[in-house]
Length: 120
Image 1 (cartoon, rainbow, N blue to C red):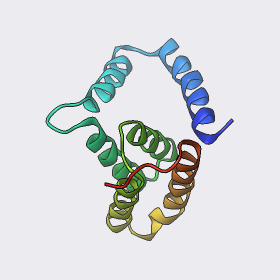
Image 2: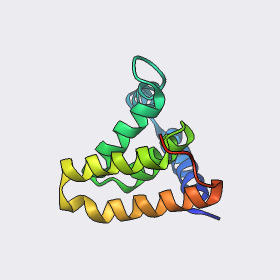
Image 3: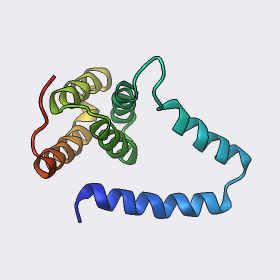
């Protein structure tokens, strides 16, 4: 099982636990988070790339993985993801480097699993 599959299996299991005990505030936040990334004035792909920058700068591994996968599924190219990660590095500084390494490893896995995507 690849990193992508492991991530979603664990995420689904843990989300189910949270929702089992969730109150109205948690449920509303979950819905807001979901809705924020839907197509709007900005397309979903752009929003996922923005989420990736924020996640790298904030150093949230789950969020980095999630936004990498969502951006990829929304059609982000390898070049777009690398450029997005570069912006996060500039914004966040050298503390982002360990997270950039893992994000790049995930990108490598995605590219190898699905074949290279065209660059923009």
